[in-house]
Length: 491
Image 1 (cartoon, rainbow, N blue to C red):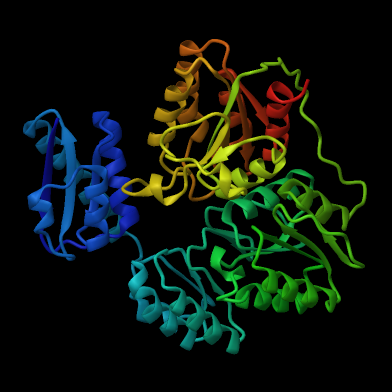
Image 2 (image 1 turned 90 degrees about the vertical axis):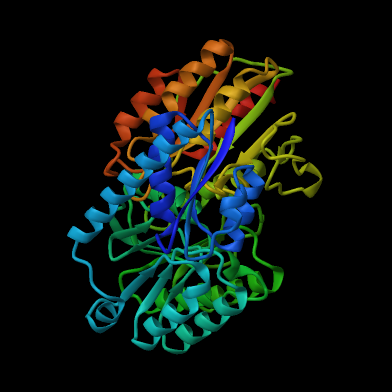
């Protein structure tokens, strides 16, 4: 195999555009070893770690675009470069035909929210301009320093504006989904979350139960850390306190730092609104108008029961075939769903790259061991690849790899629908599942679908596609995990 780096001088492109273009080439040529990145020091370090950096790439400047390929011959690499250029040119033509406006024009118009997705080091400058112009801001970008995050959130809070992020993957504002978000009906439940996949899971369960959401405000995962102090989560609580269209406020987060959790609970106690608080894995006693939930499913159900106490989650009819002594392997695209699964199996020894108990930390996230649940949205898996909700390359390969181990009895997957996600996730997963079951006929594959009937991917079609490939499909992550427990851990 030969490594080849192609340098396109002075050619800046957004990282998402580059990753999607590289993914099209990857799929066309059935070659997983292709990446396209701007030649920043961090990205060159990434290519080095992937084993696809050579001297030509090392000599590139941060304004240059590097296309790195590992393939059988230089001629094959050149063909892939030509295809990459065609795809990138096509995407550029599409962007030019859209109604492009300058950022200055955006700041002058009447819209009240600006979404920013640019390299992290530029976020402070542009976000500050937006806040000064009186705009609420959602930052999809990561790699923003915590000092910049604190500065921007304090500035926004003083102006009674929202600063969602950085690394905010999900929000639903005035009925419009931003980032990875689902089509959810309007209702009386307000959501504020430090977790994108957690917001998706809770809002879709609420929707499936016939209820709706007023707004879903993401704040970024670091907001609940003591350094940031929950600045935006508390600002979102203030917003909902004064919102006549919200009766119940639901908070979703992995466990905050202790002092931040105390401040949030104290603030909720003073509120006139009802609260459902889900600090995932934290088991707390209900207090007056505050209901606590330890899982995402429970948070959604309790929120709906605040509107109608008859709300109930239908259970999927499932007959477990016991597989004692076999291993569970979970391959997740949603980090908070993976964390919920670890909590639901906390009495079992489950290894993970994001464990609740650090003694069960995986030595190598690319190599499974014993029972394990892997968050494939973590940085180890997204270097040079789009997020696994958009690109299934690594997960498909891992599904078939897991099936080769005869000791594996159950494979657990999540399938995320909605805006920003892959247009046909079940169609991507199904062939790999079928291949895995041919390799290991006794393998049980279990999956949950995070989505609503109105999502663009067509929920029922996705469900039928997975079921036809031999997957046991469940409407919630918690039910899917419960099925795995029945197969492997219950006598």
